[in-house]
Length: 331
Length: 226
Image 1 (cartoon, one colour):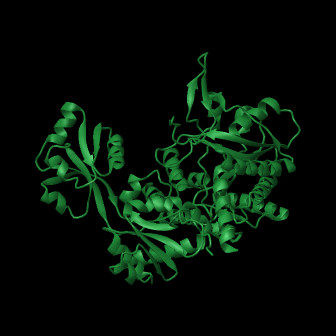
Image 2 (tube, one colour; image 1 turned 45 degrees about the vertical axis):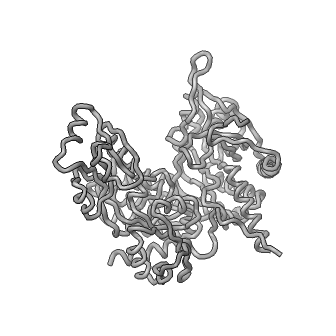
Image 3 (cartoon, chains in turn red, yellow; image 1 turned 135 degrees about the vertical axis):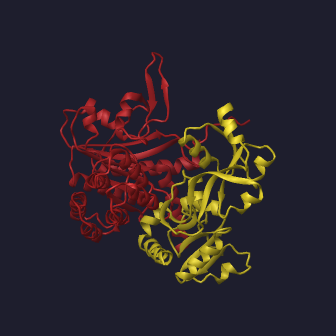
């Protein structure tokens, strides 16, 4: 007899669980080796607390009332709960603070899209270590985690979350239009971006072309030069930040698999400065992401810079299987 | 001895770039455009039943236009060409829309029977219109954006039929020349959006195969600008 479970949730049976556990252990070991202590937080929190993350994607898709009428919610990631944890339990601790987690998170799904309502994230948060070296340390841990998972071909995209917001402000684009343009940029809808920009008074063809060209710049260090050539104060500041981060990565010897990507935008509301995305050639989807969120902890009353990343463990597992199959086919 | 080969089901950022080519109304002009940028399209033009063609270092995968976002989002095709109408209708698919190719121009419109006041009557007296369409999401968004209530009825075949025999007060459909509407005694009441063919890319392919995607995009841009 079949008793259904909601779409976007699933059972894990022993064969898969064995492989997942192996992956879990490998990842946590990498984190612990580098001084990141594992923490767990409740899946259910007060909605008001999770809501401080801001942004649509960070918002919880599942809210309900507790016995005494409090509005509760399921977490949609671990970064916001850890920001809360740090402010409540580690406000006076010695910095930097290194924490890691392996935990389920919950998001809304669109029907028939194979999206998961409940999924496992493995990641780290580095609190109290400013850019650029804090960012570089996080990337170093991320690379070690990818190696431990056997994803030697994985690539890390490095972008700057403030670039386009600042650029559009500099161009004099108002709040409302700006949000709509940023949304198009996040979707990389270049046709829509161009159309949206051309509707705004005072934006010339040249500025329009600059925006589109910037969003298409991705590659090695050379793209920073190409970006600077496009000019403007916002571009100058963002490329300077990226340059510092890239230099710090090179000093640690971990810049090789990092691609600078000026068109990168993430849809979570708390990022500032550097943002990261992780890809594997075996998979058409992003397998992880992260970045800096220097302003998030302030929303919880402690003003500390922070950065981190999360890998989508199930997707890493899929990529792992694809890479193994490729290895067998190639040998 | 058999060699185990990884399934084709998942994206592979290896081998030649895979371009999803729409069959149907956009097929001819898409192939013309590919010819113009030096890709040999004689094979897909032939009467072969094949769906996949190798040509000048690129793999052409032919499919229904409405399947293009699906294949590109999953990374089974790295890049693709399809109509803006398809992209709007499937706006929840994450594909990068990189270039307006300019051809295949047509309009998404609201149409009603010629001289018939039913659309307005329903709106005024019932507060609600019944609209038959193959594009339920575009229709819903349009009426929501213009502050009107509608009941959207999704049909799969010739939508012009619906209002003629009383299924709905009007239709939302794609119009190129307007001839089909005319022949069915329908007329355009509102224009919703103009649609052309677009060049789209998979999110990961756009990052991991940047130079190939950019090179193809540049060639397409030059060819369509002419």
